[in-house]
Amino acid sequence: MTPVAHLGKTDPLAALFARVRGLSLDLAAPLSDADATVQSMDDASPAKWHLAHTSWFFETFVLRELAGYEPFDPAYAYLFNSYYEAEGPRHARPRRGMLTRPSLDEVRAYRAHVDAALAGALPGLDAEARALVELGCHHEQQHQELLLTDILHLFAQNPLRPAMWPAEPARPLALVPSGPGWTEYESGAVEIGHAGPGFAFDCEGPRHSVLLQPYALADRPVTNGDWIAFIQNGGYREPRWWLSDGWTWVQREGIEAPLYWERDGAGWTSFGLDGQRPVDPAAPVTHVSFYEADAYAAWAGMRLPTEAEWEHAAAGLDPDEGQFLDAAGPVRPQGHGLFGGVWEWTGSAYRPYPGFRAAEGAVGEYNGKFMSGQFVLKGGSCATPRRHVRASYRNFFYPHQRWQFTGVRLARDL
Image (cartoon, rainbow, N blue to C red; front, side):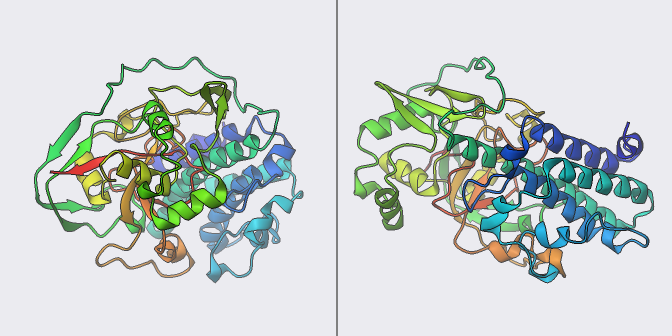
């Protein structure tokens, strides 16, 4: 039993730390050193880098401040800083895949060093330091999802189509009707944003009032079968459905289907972490960009929900009932609930809430400086660790990005 796991019997924060740190290693266990080193695009990072960066976070923001702590390797401060300008210069993001050294085993040793030091320090940490440990755990959960989606993108470049895990039989789904049902909501002022207790990222607050007009939200996300109808109806060939920037992107990139889809005779297959499989028409469509989501909604005569509408609809629901990442193993979206399965694009820009203030110091760079040119997604995905999300959670990506498990739920005005 590790020191942190033993401590976790009496300290919930230590239990969270042990669970999160262990899952990261489990997720990376099937990977070779080469698998964990290569970087497939600028938006993605090598698995080895994710494992090291999340350790750097604890070392930099918690352990470094403690008397007597010795860094595992002072050079790692340069190699594994991500975007924290206040922490000084760093290795360029597009060149993370050039880090053939340290090896994957050396990164694992780095993690063990950090884990042991934090286990020894945790009983004596003050409230501020414990809050940083909790932030670091949730930060690592974000990187667990990124590790999976980045490996998926990497393996998709390999003509052998390697599977990270053996495929499991598809879980049975209830029959999906030809069109979604609708839940209607009245107009009025509603409260959105996080208000304790419990953890939340700074961008989820302050809680505030928003005036909603009457709207309806689909009772399921858009399915692969729905999307095939969009393709067959010329959805990717008709500029009238597309935002100008989206149409430029479609033309420039030659987009004709969701990411990882390939034609197989008269049908479609999709590549996942469990290999190449036929597209399940009943499963939620995933790996689509905001541009695609918006075009589909226009084609369907609907629109995307705002983040306030989505959060209002999700209030009071139990996120833990969704399809999330429980343990290392095959990952494919199956569920149709508001939580889990696929992240759902909203039509809302990622901007600060009224009264938002970034924290002081380097940790204040976590979210606030990215509030430009991105759109909000809600609900979590099949690759999101269980209990990591809540109704107020705000994920965000640029409108062309689609390597995450991103999908669509329609809304309409009443």
